Image (cartoon, helix red, strand yellow):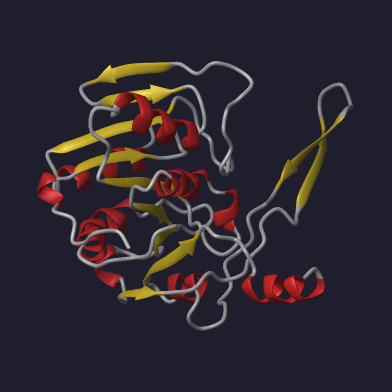
Amino acid sequence: MFDRPIDLAAARVLVTNDDGINAPGLKLLAKVARTLSQDVWIVAPEQEQSGASHSLTLSRPLRIRKLGNRRFAVDGTPTDCVLLAVNTILRDKAPTLVLSGVNAGANLGEDVTYSGTVAAAMEATLLEVPAIAFSQHYQNRSAIPWKTAEAHAARVIRRLTAEPWPRNTLINVNFPAVAPDDVAGIVATRRGRRKIGDGVVERADPRGRPYYWIGPLRDEAPDMPGTDLNAVTEGKVSLSPIYLDLTNGPALAELKKVFS
């Protein structure tokens, strides 16, 4: 178990994301972090890395660009950012907590396997730094309700860091697409089921050559009670513990019988 509670006032907090160094969600999360700690660092991708998942750049060198006091951009993935932040930028003193987001759009169900936002928190967890991923849900073609994340993020962070949670586990937080005062509560959930990318759009470029665009995003539909998707659909903030040990325990036990 990670030692808890974290003394947020004395904590070194690393803020990162997958939407890029200039994303509004990153600025929002850094603002929230600074209400909790005086030692807040930002290390985020130069460009948007949505859908990058837990990819690591191995085929070329990476560059770090200092943009200001405790603010850096990396020309790589969210995983690269956390790895370089912990091992290079903050090597004198590792972060106490990593906050990733706030992502423009929810990361629910199978989204977590594609999400660079979640992957940044995953990398921190593998480096034994507690981590929370944040995403703000919104309805297609509507404005992103950033004020909802801003209004509730600090309380979520305080409550999570006041409790222990297991190693190899990150917390995935999704804010619903409602106004701040309309949030119906904060609930612990399991991961639901929704698959993105089933609809592939085919078009032709000006020279007649085909190209393909993965999407579109599906409209939200209520999932089984107790899931992240169901909670967000009901206007609640969803908190899901994501475990990094992907071993199927029962299947392993059966395989051991076969291959003993």
